[in-house]
Length: 109
Image (cartoon, helix red, strand yellow):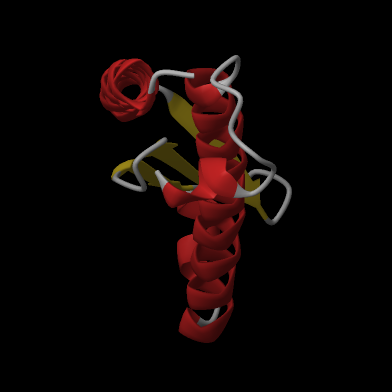
């Protein structure tokens, strides 16, 4: 087996994976997840790159204790982060599929 040809094939594969990953990252910046807490009293919209785009607080909630509002905001953001992480994993798995990478290697991107 020609080692030089094998090295060229590996470099080509690496470039393809890098291009796919960069494309997937750009795509994630445009995808959004939505989460809520308190039966919709607090809503958060976040991109797949963990940027909070919108935070909505129902006006009726503003009459409650600040601690409750803070807890609901934290819960909504944490749920949005979880959803964004899932979206990231799915997107990156798609970007590196068919590359013959061993399990767990996708997480390196």
